Image (tube, rainbow, N blue to C red; front, side, top):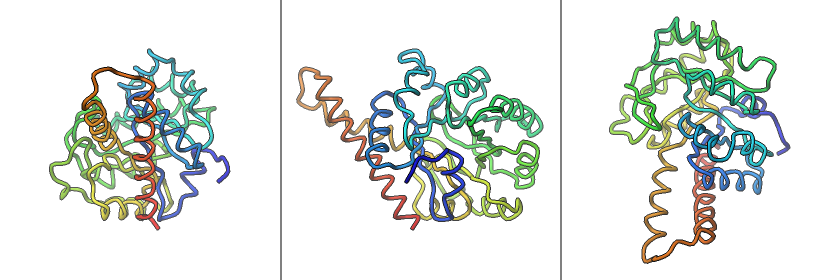
Length: 278
């Protein structure tokens, strides 16, 4: 696959494909993800929460990580954010996408603020993701109760904002699921049937959802699926195993083994969902 823009990759994926986004928390997560993408020429999204993009900026400098790691088919995306200074900084740093999340506001205010965020992306190649309905759970400082979106509200939001990518609250949640029975993927189909066009939709909180739910979501228009909790759980598992029996810390050994472990983790997810979508 040759190098394509973020928009082209999202729009060219068919009804059996979706682009995977991993919420990276540290340089190990980011480096391993980018290394795998470049080695295999796989399109992938390195996604940053507001909490961790601030950390990356303080420790490494935002422009430095963009210049070093955003190459080939690696796309940078800012996750749930309502801080306009952070949104603007990521646009100026040449991110491929930003997400304004006003889903906890009333619909009118969400629309108004999303339009303000959209103006930040003008004269850039940065796509804007919006959200209607509330993603539940708690992760990276984002806390919310599940709120299934009203399709009429979703249509009004999209018609007013014309966002490039849209996340709908369908009962999905961040963190560890206690119950997935409330997840209603048919909402995605109802929305895209009524909108009359193929707008790339986003599935947040994919970690913990069963394959049937994810597969249906993809067939109903989801082109971006997000993983965060899976990566965190995998990182804990690696560290618990790695440090058993060790009395001193060797950064070189740690980086090498952790990178290999993370690349396998990413590759297994990519392989799983590629097979799932075929």
